Image (tube, each protein chain N blue to C red):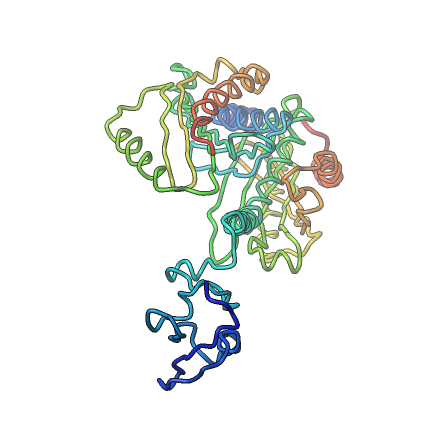
Length: 176
Length: 270
């Protein structure tokens, strides 16, 4: 029985190590829900999770998406590198009507984006007809927030809100 | 300005000269639609034949629109045109959002499940999404663990009515599977659960209330789970606001029962 226990303990530990990004997603969903954000899109691809929220009453944004893309630390060897993770943020703004002047602006910003090298923290504005998205991403080490299964949720949620606040201000001038 | 009592001659629709009669009688014919408003008239002292509609008379007819688009917008002020346009765009967005809501409500419920269990101290350790196919929405599988005793709760949700028309008829429904699992230290007990899992596998389409067993030999977990049909709108309102407390109570009752099944068969948690 000892061998069985050792084996299952190892498998269990490994499962929890692999789950660090999911643990963060769970805490973010709960923490942001308590701020009044309403989860409405939850998509999990392999090693990448996207959480979409509606922000009722927000004067600029119609939705916010938080993407968690873990790059290292899920395996026993890469664990030594820490849980390097890309956290992406997309703030979505919708205008009810798009006019021709908007289309001209879309061309300028979207064309300029083609030549930009992705840099952490940089904000990009993308237009999709009535929707204007502001995106940014940050490289973080999840180990700074997660220890075992305990998460420093307050710090993480406050930091996410700060990122979204910055994106909101970039979109505000484009709101009609 | 010519007087309405002035006797005039006019050219009728057939091109024949008529009159004299008072101008008022000719205007009456125009108002009755018997004579075009461009009919020519002449009277003593006039410089020549003149179209009626160039005499500045009230012919009782709307002014002819200057263009087809002017005709299209006739009878409406600019403000009315703007108001109708804004209303049409607003209605379009309402319908768009109705569809968006219909395809989001299951994920709002899922967010509610995560919030309810995380608030109780569980941590989310697994999140899977299966793509939509053949007219059904995608499904989601969640796995939670309680850090203290490593017991687990599994929840899977499949939205059965993502089509707004169907949802309007019968409401938003979901096939939900809720399971409870615990680590069992003895290989023989997990093996026993595996046998039952094989038996559970023969239940191709479980009816609501069917309890099945599952086992994971590698991590030493055994699970009891039950299939349910749930009305999503009991938990999620039209603004995607979730009643976390009701969701928690409903999950609690199912988890409690599944835990009883597991503990009756495999003993207390290790």
